[in-house]
Length: 138
Image 1 (cartoon, rainbow, N blue to C red):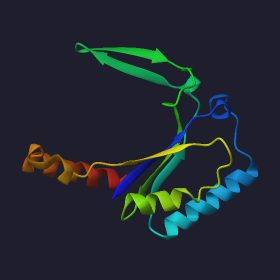
Image 2 (cartoon, one colour; image 1 turned 180 degrees about the horizontal axis):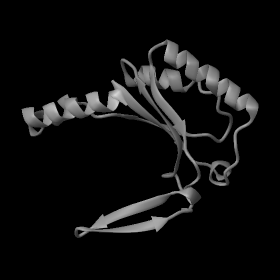
Image 3 (cartoon, rainbow, N blue to C red; image 1 turned 90 degrees about the vertical axis):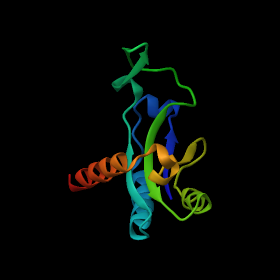
Image 4 (cartoon, rainbow, N blue to C red; image 1 turned 45 degrees about the vertical axis):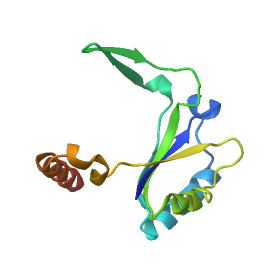
């Protein structure tokens, strides 16, 4: 099972405050443990929303809004992609993150091809497999 672990933004992350050397060191150790265990597939921190944009779609049109955006629970400051046997295992890993008070993460399962049933035709499955293979090469 693959999970996206979403690190929620905070006032500090939106202000562009960089983590301390101690936190970076602890996070590097944590990430290394996950890589060695075959759990971590990717993980990155994100710049504040002041350096981002949103695109909204309606009636075949798109509208762009540039950040910064109001600090709400839907803002993201980083993520991990992990693979575990269960949600419980993902939770166990994430309980070990070296975050201190005030940090919040969300763990969401990523869809797999099987989740789409018959709507994902053999042609669409082949396309998905081909695109994944191409992406893995880069």
